Length: 416
Ligand code: AMP
Ligand code: MG
Image (cartoon, rainbow, N blue to C red; front, side, top):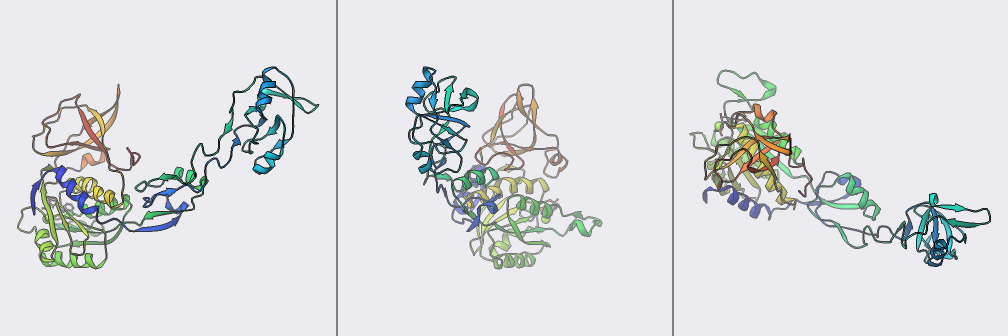
């Protein structure tokens, strides 16, 4: 068992374990896939465009027709092509010019389209082109957008309506996506009162971690199928773990009871049911006593320290990371932003700072907010992301470039 590992090592351990526990897959109709994570490559069934077609209403010219246009000679119109006409119909029209509409197939002899605004149609069935076109003008070549048989969307991408547009046009009607991860969670602590059954008595506080964890897991696209409050006893915790294992979950998280207090029974309870403790305690602030384990049935388990901000940080970063790996999502990379204020920080400890990305004179800058202690929740209402400083860094000065992660990992496109 590892003791006190670094943030980077912790991510490495999670990646290795989560990589062996991919979330299961299901085939769904295209329109129902929005918001889900693609689990298998999407392959174009058709080329886009499927045939050479016209990008404008106007006239299609042959090479000879272009030559005639250069010498300002009228050209005979051989026919008319409309969107929906077959390629065979288009090829059956023979000559050096034909009327053509947007989306209509271009005949084999077609070299360029002249848009309607740049020509005069004469009553005697000829056309006078005002300016000769370049070869290929306003022709959308077959396969120039999407090639049949090519992988057009890779696993790990969250489906958005724009994807549906491109996928539908290339004939993809169903996608294989990851099912919603099944999550179980519990808050621990005798001092906690459910927000709905308050107010808290003397020495009690509202349980804020459980509503938070529920909301955060749902925002990550999970189904929360087990949710409990557990008192500060080993027996109760063991009971919760057994129920969690029966519910065939992908991931379990708990808040509280992982530090050094007399009632910190999460680790003993995990050991009692035969879980493997992968690591306990990360050299970071906040959320140092983070615990990561594998339950005997293979389910991933995160024991998050109970301080509200520790729970937020560890969910946002470590739990989200595990879910990303389990759904083959591309890993997040931070924005590099200029720091507005000085930040005091010891070396040897990674820190997560509640932060606000703001519009500066020369572009976006980032400000570390007041109130960085792990019990201080007011800045959570102001922040829009986190400054993350690795353990290798010391104090930072205004003007330094720092790593910034938005509060919502989906606040930016998945690929960035
Ligand atoms: P623990 O990790 O159990 O030692 O708790 C650390 C601090 O977080 C204590 O001040 C707890 O009262 C507080 N805390 C623990 N769980 C919660 C929770 N679910 N909601 C709000 N505060 C909590
Ligand atoms: Mg506690």
